[in-house]
Image (cartoon, rainbow, N blue to C red; front, side):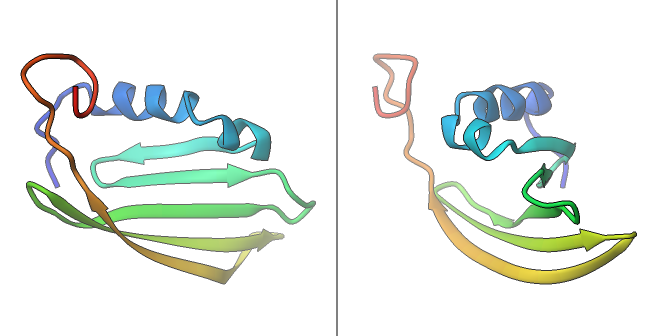
Length: 100
């Protein structure tokens, strides 16, 4: 997937920094690529790794998948999978934020 916005990585990091629940969980961005974000969580000695990706990006609907792995001594075990549909609300011409 080739991003249409050359500043996608900065936009993802900025969006991530506004998500207070990620700070509460201690989540850190490990890797960002077009359609993929990998997060690390410090919950346990073994640790967790979450890998998310865009499966299909449309004008109004985007289908995403995320897998969460428990990691220990270089081994990974899949412990959760998420499939989500995200609705993209177009911006109106009157403002800068979503739906404004």
